[in-house]
Length: 538
Image (cartoon, rainbow, N blue to C red; front, side):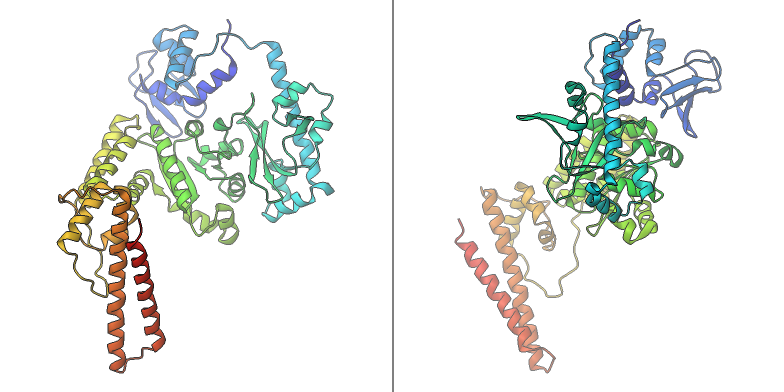
């Protein structure tokens, strides 16, 4: 019987979890590493039907039924092989390929790609320890890599000349081009990687399929990867996964970091379950691969704004894969550091602390929403609630979705429905008059982005925004100008009161200097100048 292209069937198996497919017909309960239920192929009261998510197989210890997602759909839906593939493709959102077998010539061509890449890997490894690779070797050793680590991860060096083009000049040019190692230019073939520290990229079975090259001369981009080829698809490849698979199974979780050096250092320091995407944002395919091994994931990102945004995107992507037994968390490395630097300066204990303190998905999503929407206002709350509703609808387990929704509704009632008062300032500022209050209410409810930008200042005014206000017909520029002006005026009032208190203190013999008073006066003058510029600003 003819078969579909193996790459298509493999991707189908990668995207779809056998637990999800079987779970549509058989209630499953996780026990140990596998899921168990009553066999759909014979009558039984005691569950003997086992589903292994990582391996992608089911097996009944009662009747001996055994297979994968394809055979399960064929047998339960009474479908022929092509129809089963079509149904699974619909579930995975994949376009059906032509129904044709892989030809011997095609297989021979793919084998030649693997052979070329393997020989290139060996050449790069050799060059790293030759004089031409001295800079690369010094760099990688300076990053804490031992020779054993270099050997394990098969790290190498691509020189400045066209060594691959020259060394493999006797090979079929189209095969060489298909590996992504060389390109064709105006003056002939040339190496894609030159003067780079080379990190081989392995497939799940441990074969090198591509490379990630790091710049050694400070040029940007810092990393370049092999472009997508027939063997390598960046969106579907996870760096370090071939080394991490067993540890993910043993430790019942995976850790996702941002870069390959971080992933290697984590693996070598006892966090063998660590992986990284390849110079691209995390994708649904990456999550699907990880979830087939284990649905417990810790995302470990930088604590800066970019890291927070990356975490928010990861949360959005992972939601469709979450189940009631999933444990998804978010850890953040702060202080301008990355996991590699933490391990060097704080050691394994510091990294364990960061991982152990990771925030659960439900709390991270809640906190992120609070930080990015002005939930003290009706408009802001509406936006926040719509955002959470949209995100939670991605959860395919409707019971779990309902429970999280109820948890969030409880938090909304307890935290969002009242304006939080801040601590009173040490220097009392004038009360906000009615006109100013109404103006601010109008701005907050009509310009939520501006309100979010000045949320800290607005919260200090202790104003209730749950009221109506007259329509002023302003644009965003006028609204922001008003808030900035009010902020400056209140700051000036605070400075003037501080100056008054300290001048009275000097009269009473307190230890204030003329320099301190002069500094306050200078600040007041600066504020006056800024207010004057603001007044004449268009």
